[in-house]
Image (cartoon, rainbow, N blue to C red; front, side, top):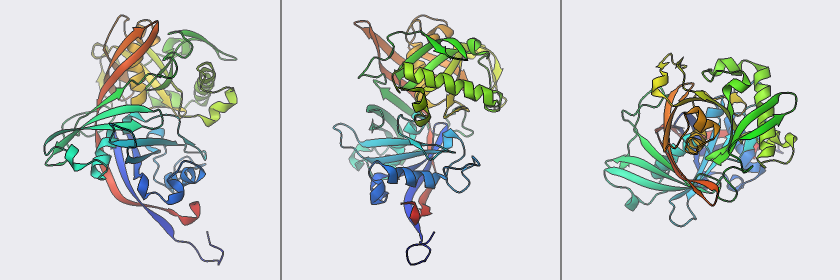
Length: 397
């Protein structure tokens, strides 16, 4: 596009780091490096991130941008020195829609949370006195989207972030260094963790059916359903659902009605502007299956099977925040997740997802009839894939 004189404008050149965190990838920015108009929330910031990712793309490929045409790879992270006491950095996450001009700021990305501490150290946002020569740097992160604390344990070697290692994470092809991530008080403290007041509800969805549902605010707002009530086994891979438009429409309709019942939106129509939350997932008892890599998952290795959808599609593995919700729900007797895992009290759960297995720990307690989760813990990994500058047409802003 041209300016008022008829000359074509050059592209903007913005410092950026492309990172993998857990089973997701995204572009990481230091807040101070963004153009002034995008350093504050609003239309300019959204327009910038959309154009950088190549959205909206009616072809669904994000060919003219950095997005990878899946919910797991169309993500943006903005990091700054924290304004909160006892925290090192503030972390803001944006889920960039692929075929719509929309950035969802309503939730966190648990997978990319594993990369935040490493990015902050590499970007000089953490004082060098906090980084050991060798050992583990404990980075306290303020998650701005949901106003929660995340503690990342970043391995350090010779004063630098250690990225390579032998930790294997199902859904990630190559091993890397292990990063322990603690999600502190992940349940909703402003409201109840179970917004309806029940650990299991009857969810009525006109034209589709009536379902048992556990609706929980922990890690990320999530509605859990029983696989069999939906006509599934709980061992499905992406193709079984993502290639079926009717199935995707069914899940989105159920998600919309759950969002209303959870008090996240007032009207069904508003679900179209809140795509990132709530998540929808279905559970079943532990069963044998072949993961997407061809790896055989034996039911003896897991407590239950879980499948979850993100941004309207079945996720290839498991969202980190949804894993927090799974661990939290599993720790509370009587939820659908807990019952699928065999019931009873537990402080950790190992579940099967389309790419393999994941273990998450959670500590739940009940006070005056209300459940809360003190902490959820899981291991992930992260790695810088590329760093430099991303370019975007100047007319974007």
